[in-house]
Image (cartoon, rainbow, N blue to C red):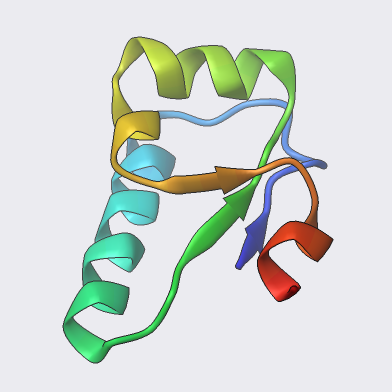
Length: 65
């Protein structure tokens, strides 16, 4: 799990890193989820369609249950 709540900005390198870690989790049989970030980060993830490929939750508790 990666908590994006403190993140105000993400660029293409950051987005690529998230995708890479998601792909790595699939190959190792592990779960990978993101805790929703700022409106700006969420908007960029939506525009780039990265959000369609990742599990995004509103709080850490959602994934830990």
